[in-house]
Image 1: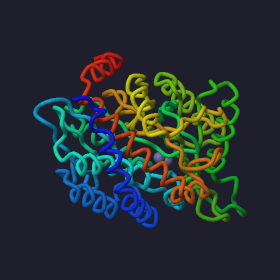
Image 2: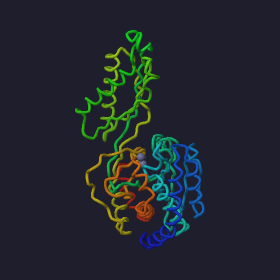
Image 3: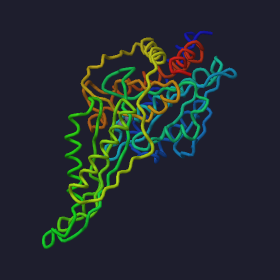
Image 4: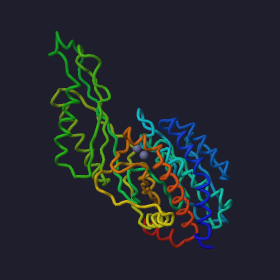
Length: 392
Ligand SMILES: [Zn+2]
Ligand SMILES: [Zn+2]
């Protein structure tokens, strides 16, 4: 059987589920939950998948808010994973539109189960619920726990101000600098103190100067987490957290080395002691897979959903999906859920994440994910090509 014989049924099933999916997307949007605490979204998404016939496992990979929903096919064969994210941002709610990712991914699985029951091809399709994209690197934890073992290819969509099947993402090293000085009265004995706030300020200045000599894809940005207690005490302890980003993994290590030199310099200039600590988990850049991306794009054409040229106005973000893409063939296409030029992680984007454009993106995303996953089961040569391109 060719996938074309069943595709119209799957498309119709997404259309039948569209009101339910949009209502769930809005409910998740109205109930923003931070990384690893996505209990209600986890319950609603798993209930949806179960109600439509998928076999659901809750709390996989030792993460209580992760899940795996399986739609079985006819006998042994490959496993294709569709990923769903559902965490929100502190203070901003669903300003990254993960409510749309969640319901597009779960909607794809629910529609496949509803339309086909058992898949008419060998293998299986799984919806993997991946918590904590914004700061918790949930997918790295699931990779380490073996949840992706036996998965042959993975895919997800992400909302954006335009539809682009391929955009690079940057790797990240997260690092903190802690400065230790000496407290004293800021007015009566200032010369007896060692000012740890000055060291943090020096570090920001040094990094801003270093920026001129960095490659254009590099990004350094930080916040002062601890800047002192009150103005009449010379700060004895300060801390600043930074993300160092680049398209290239080895350049990330170079950035970390140079960050360390800047921190040492700031400490020397102010008489402080510094500790630099990099988090062991590194976000990896997305490894492209043209074979999978082309299939996805063909399915967007099949459902008449337009792809937009990249206007080049924006730089790149990062995702823990990059780590998945370094472990197995993976795509992370962007689907339009806002007008041009609306940045992610903004209050404006949070509003668009529950708009009619978001509904259109959700429905198109669910369809294209379901159809692309079916293609990979129905056409083993395409999966073989994706694996060959990946290099395994
Ligand atoms: Zn985000
Ligand atoms: Zn996101």
